[in-house]
Image (cartoon, rainbow, N blue to C red; front, side, top):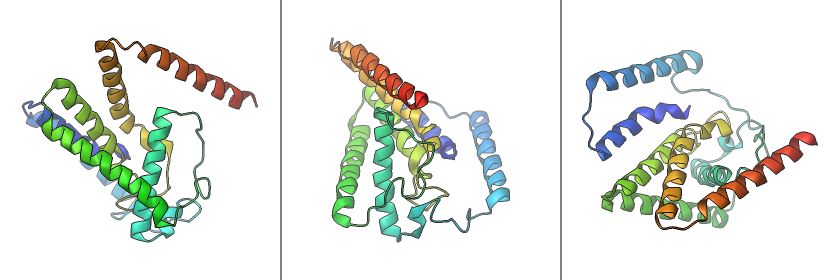
Length: 212
């Protein structure tokens, strides 16, 4: 679902790098987008699935503001799984991730989101270096990839699903590669040991899960 954001993201990427816009290329992207929208309209209608059981998406039963606050919290959870995917699950449906109904708790996630987004926008406006532009693009891919599937603007069929991370993973991998390159340029030899250690930890964890 998140790949629907590809067209606006590629437009933004070409604007950042000041590449010439080619009508034929963008025509193909637009045609693929329209084809997807037509297939989606045929399957679930213009407004999507009308009734969503609470067991599939508990966020659908919340008020708009509470749903948006919980969606931001789940987005941070997904980011955590990108950084440290040690606790993956085949099912995140009802009560696997309890809802948060108190605003003081949600305020932490909302404030963290606002701070990160403000820093990302400031970085994108101020930076002129190639790496800075690439980092801004990585954030654009990640945030844009989650924009429509995060339950923030409207509720979807599920509260969270790892398939939503497929397209945003491109932005995360780009950011990780830029971080690795920065460490290497500054002769900080921590990147490769950390990568090996984290991969070994994940492998051990998955081996225990499969063997149990």
